[in-house]
Length: 245
Image 1 (cartoon, rainbow, N blue to C red):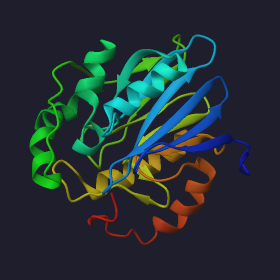
Image 2 (image 1 turned 60 degrees about the horizontal axis):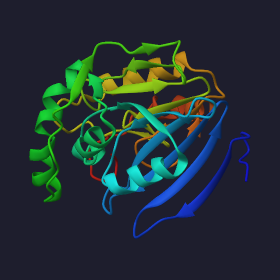
Image 3 (image 1 turned 135 degrees about the vertical axis):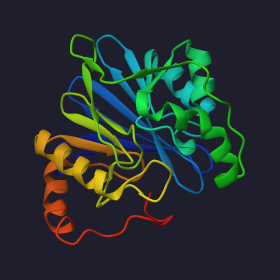
Image 4 (image 1 turned 90 degrees about the horizontal axis):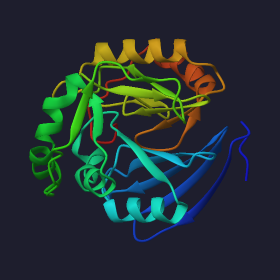
C-alpha cells in the first residue's frame, strides 16, 4: 500500500494493544511498535537494508515484543536513542540495553529526568520500570558516515533535552511535534515558549518531503506540518492536558 506521498507501508496486528506498522524509507526499513493502553507510545526500529544495522528509538513498554521483532528481522542493534526520557518512552530501555549490550544515548540536559523515570512511572502510571544504568549523554550527535547516517537536532520545550533525529528522508520527532499538535508543556522541565521556538526552527531546517514519525500517533510530512503550523502559530493553543502529550 502507498500513501499520497509515496511511502509504502503495511500493518499487522500483534497481541492485545500492540500494533506493528512497517514503512520503507529510501535505504531503511522503519518499524513502529505501538504499546501502552493509556498513551499508546511509538517505539521505532530503523534497519539499514544493506548492512542490517539497526537503531532503536524510544523503547516503550514491551521489551519482549521489541526483541522478538528485531530477532525475526535479523537486525544488528548498534544504538538505542532516546528523544526524551519520559517513563512511557523508556519502559523497555533497561532490558533492551542489557539484551543487546548497547548503551542508551540521550541529550545531556535530560539525564536527571532519565534517573527519575522509575519514580514518575509509579506516580503517573502505577507501574514499575527498571532504571537505565547504561547510558551516554551527548550534546550533539552527528553520524554522517554510519549506516544509516543521522544527526540530532536539539528541540527543547517538552523536556529540556528533547531531540529529534534526522535521517536522510525521515525524522523521529518524539513528543516535540506530533500530528497537528505539539507536546505537553506542563511537566517538569517543559516550556511552552521553548517548544514553539523549537517547532519553528525544526520545520525551517527540513525539506517539505521529509516524513516525520512522532512519539505518539501517525506520521506526516514536513510540508503538511508547515501548513498546519502557519495557522497554529498565530493562535497558539495551550498544550497542558492529558489528551495532548
